[in-house]
Image 1 (cartoon, rainbow, N blue to C red):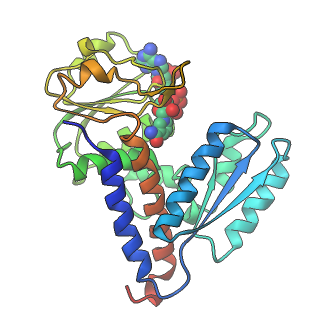
Image 2 (cartoon, rainbow, N blue to C red):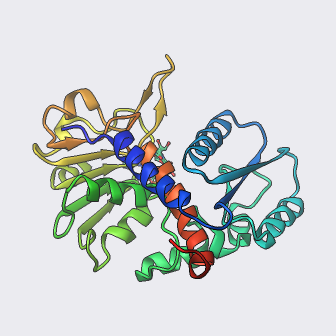
Amino acid sequence: MILDGKKIASQIQLEIAARIQKLKQRKPGLAFILIGDHAPSQSYVKAKQKACKEVGIESTRLELPSSVSQKELLSSISSLNKDTSIDGILVQMPLPSHLNEQTVTSSIDPSKDVDGFHPINVGKMLLGQDDGFLPCTPYGIQELLRRSHIQVEGKHVVIVGRSNIVGKPLAAILVQKKSHCNATVTLAHSASTQLSLLTRSADILIAAIGKPHFIKKEMVRPESVVIDVGINRLPDGKLVGDVNFEEVSKIASHITPVPGGVGPMTIAMLLQNTLTSYLRRHVKNDLL
Ligand code: NAP
């Protein structure tokens, strides 16, 4: 069965739009900072701004040249931190190499860090505290599983890829002693030995590697659930995931397509985090 992330994300967007329509005060505000002319970053921000518009979030985009100094960038972030019409700040990654990603991320007000990358929010996530923000891609994967009625509780989840934006936070989320978590998690990476043995032991296999068609049929246990986070562009321009969809879809019980799987869920959770941030600021004054 195909897990239609696009459809589920549309449903989430409808729910968010309905909630925003009822707000009595200003609309939620999300500020994007886009540095340089990195084409994929431009198209990601464009897609996110389009989604904001669809649900009624007011988004702004600050475009800075790739030569921007760290001091100038931090000063722009500081202004947005103080701006009371802004609930979320997203600095689109990757940054030019002269800018320090960790310093930039840490300069965002944690209460506006809707990407969930600030060390305070990473700490809250690890501690299982609910008053931070979960990073959008792992949060989207959890929500995709939840809304598809796929239980993770007690299941063996094998994640391949340990990046700070996908693999590590997803492991931290799914291992929590909470509902829609409580999984037994294995986090594999490039130094893992006998990877196929690990992946074949998964009830739920999550691929976040960044290598086209890396997960082959032989690496997947029949009737398991396969979530493909990868977004890879082939030389012919085709977009494919980290999983060989054609062969793995024949044996998996559920599988996400690329595109149309995890990608739309990531955007939906960015909108959700922005609304959450807004509500934390305003809920007392707003009749919802
Ligand atoms: P990343 O930072 O490059 O991390 C890749 C991970 O894969 C690393 O942990 C690496 O191991 C591991 N890996 C690489 N080769 C491996 C191998 N042969 N065996 C086992 N593990 C291996 O990538 P990322 O940022 O997490 O992104 C992963 C993919 O997801 C990319 O295609 C990206 O475009 C996509 N993505 C999609 C979304 C979405 O919304 N759908 C969001 C974010 C990312 P080491 O740590 O040992 O190097």
